[in-house]
Length: 248
Image (cartoon, rainbow, N blue to C red; front, side, top):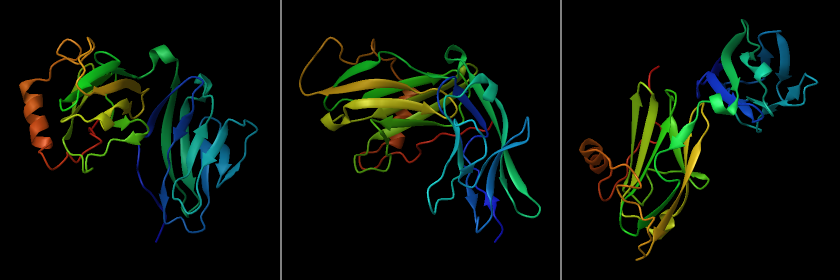
């Protein structure tokens, strides 16, 4: 079979100055073909397979043996790195996939923002309600608990997600019913192509601190959202979708 690209991520990538930019390229049926990354503005071949062909040591390829992923990694990205990059396979004829990288200053960056307090206290057995807004139309938004992606198919159950697209950007709401002590920790709202934001959740056993999550600490979900949460999170089954994608 001929090699082909598995379009796994957005081709429009936003990075922040001095942070790491990663352009994700997955090639199926590679066989013995060569995978290269080219910078379009000067037609410079930056990498070929796992080898780097530039004196700029910020550029490298993320690739694990037997993996189909050949990701271009740019450490300490600068505004001058903005532009079009091509992932190429030396078939006959050659195939390529173009990515547009936009490196921006932190204040102007596409970014997530936690709605409400960045430290939330809830009572054991109650519902954890977290929300974040993104100032762009994010193609997908993931939630992480500590370093692990929130698993909607876990035995825990009672987890639901709503993602809403508005004129101002994208809003994502995560709800976890029947809060347990193990639900405590750091929750990160991670939009594709934007800077993430985090909130710390404390699940308390019978304590009633002033910072307990209430309608004043976190906006109350609408009746429609509550109904959606109940539909997505019946007692013995969790919601199934972690990423909410939109057609641009």
